[in-house]
Length: 52
Image (cartoon, rainbow, N blue to C red):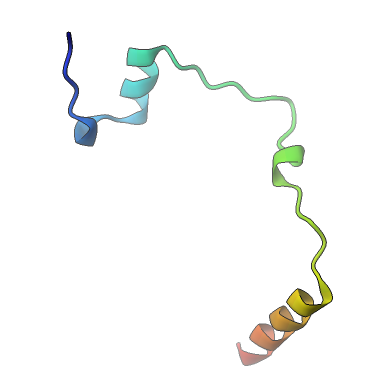
């Protein structure tokens, strides 16, 4: 049995040791979609922006 020190592991180590592989679909758009702002949220952003 192998004991691993998690504080010394890199992402590459984890991928190699556990056989993980990065997989991407053709588009990230569905993962990055945002819901429309509520009017209250829009007003808060305007207030924040006016203070900058």
